[in-house]
Length: 259
Image: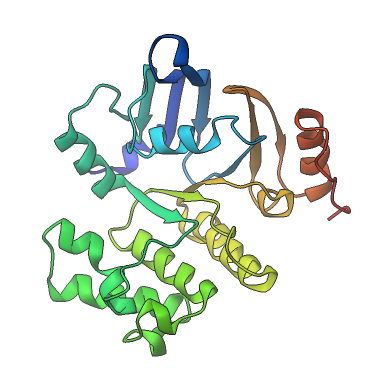
């Protein structure tokens, strides 16, 4: 599943007609109802919408964590709708890195050991991968905290560790689910800067779910969901513009001051 330069015209993410239904019979919930999403290589896209609009469900399907009920989905040209567990595991390991709201670090492991987890799962423990883990911690400003456990790190530092972990196996696509949701304003800005730099300086593709217009405005493009469908999109760059569109979907949302 390795990618080559000749694949550069293939979108990082291409999904068409995604449907996700939870439950049976009269208890069915249609979380996604025919969603199309194309994200180009190196693009940073934010996904927003009211609670229950299908944001996290879409991210989980794109991340090969949850199957779609119907529709097609591909990462880097590799379709995986209907794929078996072995194929999905391989795709996640080779192409996708994850950053979660609650960090998902193992409390008994040090920062560098948490960064190395994807390599251990992939049965890699060579010196090169260990050097990369150290370099990534240095890049996110935590080289001196490599031996510290999560309990010895602030929330912002824990999220930095999770970003380093997401990058360990050099994925083309990074998925971030509310990456600033548990952080103070300063730490949140630092995390958004790191994610933005992944796209601008490394050409990695970033897809981020967020409820915060200021966070979404960092992206190149903001896609809005409502009731499991794409309700529209706006360019990034302005929290005011993002907030105004969001308010049309969820009228009780406060529109932030212009950014």
